[in-house]
Image (tube, rainbow, N blue to C red; front, side, top):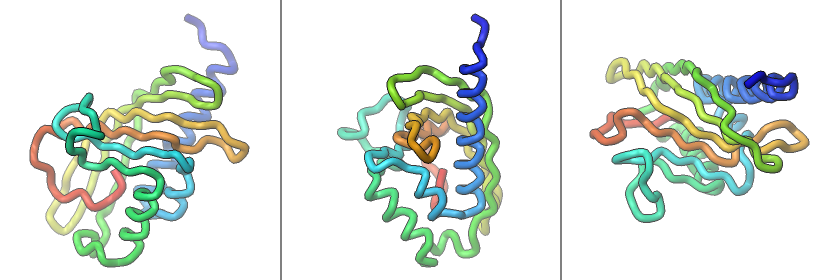
Length: 163
């Protein structure tokens, strides 16, 4: 299938949005990161498999929009002692795929590697992320983000940053 110019423009806009979201999280720019979310957003990192029901089974993260705000305020409070000093973070987002469109929503998937350097040492977090991006007058917003960690079936180190 030959990509059209519109498809190419959409893919570029999606990539730029995902790169920006990653950079804001890496740089601990939490208020700007929080502003990327829609009012009906879901931020989810499943535990013990990728296809669990988060309403019935435990998740690493399962936040609605209100809980995303609470998470950000906790990070900004200075009382996250596992983040004192803050972890050094860098993400690589790749294998970005536009999976489909429905109205203003664009479904996207990507692989991610997050390198974390903290007091306890260095950790690499790998995941397959699924996103629902919503087109708004301000550009894309995150309506849904699922972070399926490769090792979510094992005990994890403290994850006290935005994954």
